[in-house]
Length: 319
Ligand code: KG4
Ligand code: ZN
Image (cartoon, rainbow, N blue to C red; front, side):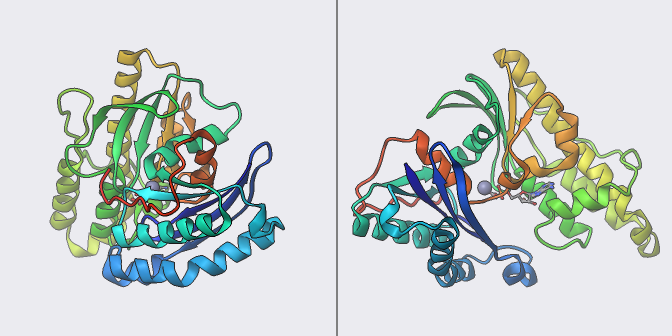
């Protein structure tokens, strides 16, 4: 089975070709970071337009890279949501049109399921049931993965997602957007014990990151301007430490409560080096598959049998 996967949920245009028994045969990813940087966040309309401009040429390139003709495809998988509705519709429309023309199934993939199943591309794959720490720009959840398509959310953020906390923190530190990777890099030069940033301990297995963000805001505000530059790495390291600590504590609590054998870390924040190091026993998704990509969408299709009628376009902004 050869599946062409298309990801356009936010600001990455992704196209990948997955072949059963072989794995990812070709993959392309185009980032829109420079397009949105001046605005400090993703501008939905600009994102949709850029996906339109990039997607078709990228499909051609991926097919060329894999040396496969359109007629050699057995299914087209696309991210149906959650995400920016206009951006999703660009990928969904192309996927459905291709599927209709080629008389193959169009497979609507839930973006978060793509993130979770990305960890199954690592050998050996985690065994069910396992606990997924799903941490991205839009979501922070602890999910009990009972089997394929069988997910139970056992904890989630009450306010900001972990990636959002990284991005907002980076903005306060003048590191630009998106900021997770920038904080990760800068934190390596700083002292994580320099500032005591608390993380709210909310009941149950939920998270809250709005308090730590406010603590950083005050710390930055209270530092004399000439000291801020010298303390930036310490601030980044302490801020990252607080977020990672909260994620790790809750993941351990959830794993103990659920008697989960393994913890998988997935989503963009799973790329964070401190988080990966702080959960050495966990199965992190392959580094290049943590942030948004089409390989996780194309390969997730191997697990899904709910192929949609190509004349139906699935797109939803919220899960
Ligand atoms: O999964 P993803 O690519 O997109 C969403 O589905 O949201 O996640 C993007 C998020 C952003 O908030 C970004 O700052 C964060 O992942 N991120 C990181 C790192 N790399 C990306 N956060 C912390 N450390 C990183 N190395
Ligand atoms: Zn994502």
